[in-house]
Amino acid sequence: MTRVRVPWLFLATVAALFVPALGSRFYTFVATDVVIFALFAVSLNLLIGYTGLVSFGHAAYFGAGAYATGILMKKLAVPFVLAWPAAGVVAGLMALVAGFFCVRLTKIYFAMLTLAFAQIVWAICFKWNDVTGGEQGMPEIPYPELGWMSALPILGDWRASDHFYVLTVLLVAACLWLLRRLVGSPFGRILTTIRENPERAEFIGVNVRLYELIVFVIAGAFAGLAGGLFGIFNRGVFPDFAYWTKSSEVLIMAILGGIGHFWGPAVGALVLLVLNQQITSYTQYWPFILGSILIVLLFGFPGGIVGALAGAATRLRKARGA
Amino acid sequence: MRKAFDGFQAVAGVSLRVARGQIAAIIGPNGAGKTTFFNLITGHLKPDAGAVLLDGIDITALPPHEISRRGMGRSFQRVNIFPKLTVFENIQAAFISHRGRGLDFFRPVGQLYRAETDALLRSLGLADRRDEVSGFLSHGGQKQLELGLALASEPQLLLLDEPTAGMSATETRETMQLIERITRERGLTLLFTEHDMEVVFSIAEKIAVLHQGRLIADGAPSVVRADPEVRRVYLGEAR
View 1 (tube, one colour):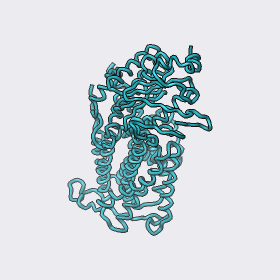
View 2 (cartoon, rainbow over the protein chains, first blue to last red):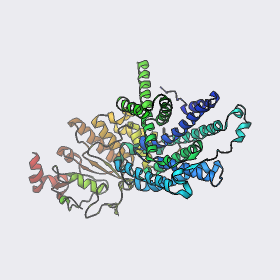
View 3 (cartoon, each protein chain N blue to C red):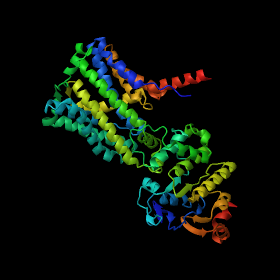
């Protein structure tokens, strides 16, 4: 009765690498956006889906990572191999500070405090002109040095934005692989006990606050890594990366795709961004349509897109088995 | 120990000593302060005055997870498990936590402590329910699983708050036999609260009677049964 394990990450990575071969600048643009937000949304789901902590301020760490990489690469000419990991470190440290306070609260109070910290981060980005460029942001973040890709077969004909896309796909795939290992580890199992019943978790010997703080830092660090890539992709870093609307956007992706499944938020990022691109070209009422989709989903498919698909697959297997 | 809520003395100066290896029960009518007293011992509530000593060490100020690590396992009056995890995953998580493997971020969790978990499930009579989602177990099954969660942390002292609450007469008898067997096999100290007098007098070696937040009797079952005060406030009401 062993179920075939589908190597989703491998398949998705291979498929994603073919996108630039379609030859459309626009497709590569949308695909880069999707891949980066997939990592951002999956990092958020460590908190929501696995630990039961709803963060309304996850964009703070995304923004912090974007500024870290952007400032290092543009102002200090630090190479990408150092500037990108720095995004994870800076965002992780900020999550450590904010998390130290947040995990002392529960439920809605936790959510409000994450939002409060995110607004502080946004305000700093907005006002600290000398370092962040303030309201104007920081345009013209350079691409990493990817000239070596031109020497490779096939890739040689692609544009610089395609090269950066290939790099993004590979880095995000590595991050997702790490996160997949994390949620399937003993640590991940303990997180689910906290989600299910924090009081009981304490009484099997789990230091709930410590675990919450650790996962908050990990989630923040990976959000920061996503942000680091996004600043380069976007050719500039702006305060609204850390604004609360960004936090709600990634929250919607996670819920749309399904928080009960590891890949749910990634699928949510794909669906939301592609729909956004497609529908805004027909109508200006995108928020109206998004709202309607969410209402249908929340009532009809509370497990999100992946939850609904997984449920259907299980029913199909049962029907065949019977 | 003392504990008051908004001026109401839930536990009004109770002192209790349980010897190693003893099976002790706390009884008393509803509202006598049994659960409050229990929560003081297990660190869920902090006493207004008094202290909890485990093996002579003061554990009063410790958080529950620390108390759990020092060898105290507990169950709750209302079923308190991890409902969306399977039976196996529930117990496995308790082993992971107790043995300090929770900060392992990378190894696949699947087979970890499989032998220990399966052995414990067998001794609880839950082996054939192993892969069921625990929230779908019968009430009795969930209570047994909860006992398993307490046992997986390999405690020396087991505290069970109404382990048979909501069970039928048959389930109650079976559960108490299970608890007694496991307590004896593992040489545990057991302290439990219970409202079913038959259960209490059949297995307890020591009985403490609470009434309106005070300890009115404390001793061997025969002594407690003969105590006129107990007969008046408690047994008299029940019979």
